[in-house]
Amino acid sequence: MNGGKMGGIPATLLACGVITRLGAVVNTAKVELGSSVVVIGTGGLELNAIQGAALSGAYPLIAVDSFGFSLIFSRPPPPAPFV
Image (cartoon, rainbow, N blue to C red; front, side, top):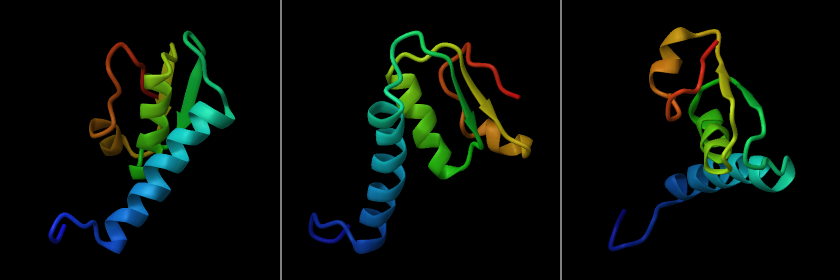
């Protein structure tokens, strides 16, 4: 950040990752309290889908990833299971 202004790359990542993935869960899928959600992948973009599902009150919220180390950095609040 320079003088309170956000640069192009951070703004792009924020717009693409957070708003698009969180919006897909909240607005497109319309996840409601108690809905079951499975998110495939736990990379940077999928983390925002996990956050959107958690904010919507999804339960169970399951994250699936073939790379175990990704799960370490993407844990939603317990007791969310991981596969």
